[in-house]
Length: 69
Image (cartoon, helix red, strand yellow):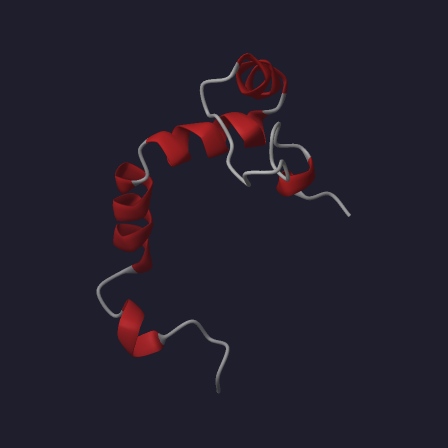
């Protein structure tokens, strides 16, 4: 299974914290576009959040997630 969590440096350490600015994270981000995207979003999630909300449209809550029919 190809999971982002298995590729993040520091995830699963004794504190459960990751360092977005660590050398290992920066090197991983240079070689993996998904990690680079994760770091960008984790450092400043508001632009991504607002873009997704705008894409979802004004009736998002009325439509729901589609999990329940």
